[in-house]
Length: 262
Image 1: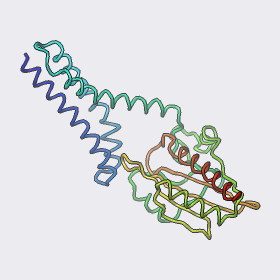
Image 2: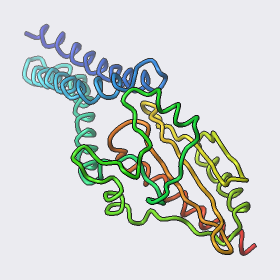
Image 3: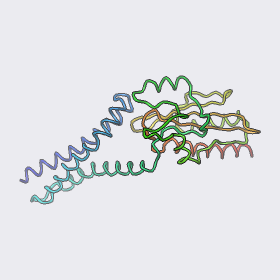
Image 4: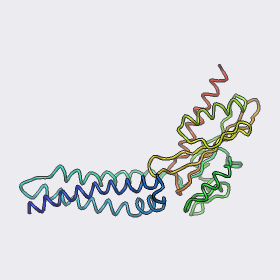
């Protein structure tokens, strides 16, 4: 029995470590284009992820019981490590699921809901190549249950509003572009004459891309800044796009006021 215990504990630790490799393969394989996102994220992570973790967890739990109750006691630490890996991953998954429950299932956030900033043809073409990707139709978009995306944004993100700066559009554009570069985004288009900036934000895990459009227009003696952030894939962005827009516009407001006073 002791021999069986030793073999089981070692196998449980190996299985749990292979689970880590499995999820790294899903995440990094998707990020570097080795796996389509529908395989790496949807299938490997969302569909098969829970069964994989539960299987590894049960296997490791048996290893813990064997390590505790088969004498002489041995391998308890290894068994606990084997159990901790799937348990921690399941716990994180439950946390994300609970957090997502309070977030509207939308992925397109704009400061202007009547005339949202558009995107260049390059962005449209890049998005068209994605399997089951999101479109850019915000004005008439609805969730699968029929709810209006715009109504959901107004209800949940009422604070996402245009920014009016005290500077002229050209000076506002320069500050906005410098700030965009500081975010670590990939700037794909910047035209001061039209007051348009386009950028891509990419997540570390899975390499999910969100397209960002910043539009600057004259407004009285200053300028109006509108911003839009749209996920390329996924029904819900888990609040990421709104969380990107808020601090950017807040910092831009501070910098344009400082520039006005200097």
